[in-house]
Length: 253
Image 1 (cartoon, rainbow, N blue to C red):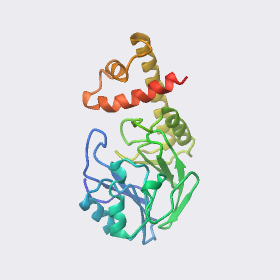
Image 2: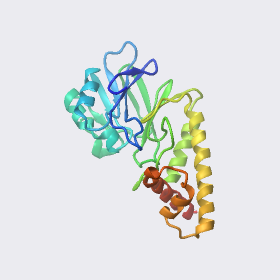
Image 3: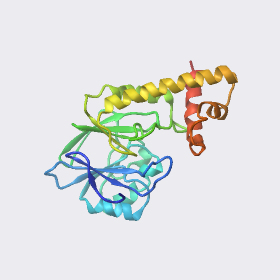
């Protein structure tokens, strides 16, 4: 399963990093993109600073560009080392992550490896979260996962931003596959985004009900203990981060 390149679409293959955890699921998906007749490859999210994983990525080069969906270490930590190995630039929304190339922003088009990727800013999980749209798929980082739901990460994640990002993804053309940062690929980004929106509305209503029971000044931990009572407690810290974002959203009116 780990470190074996697995084709997923006509232009996208995945190399799974061996960093499993409750938050990363089986591990980080490093995506390698190239047109069928292209020599070079685009790398999305090199993953952690794992020399074996990074050398396996480099073996599938030459690498044209290294793109980051966001700054979390399980996606970006290995980027500088991969740049050393491949002499490819690192591009991201966060200027602190950019190496040897230009940054990325809304509406940019990355043309390399025989492909064109359209950049969407999709904040919410983090402020610097990006998605990349191909003709037949969208790479979502942690904005949409292959299994489960996304944490609104402190300190810069915001639920209002996340809901707006999900609405953008819900408007994508029907049939675009989801190539996520963790977990398996999914068949239809728009449908998944609409499911995520429904789930978030359900959670918000549960939090509203918890506040009615606990009082308006309830802490995130108190809400988690009530709303997430049926969830494995190993996931409660992540749930607490999301509940904090939900409380901020509700209290802001």
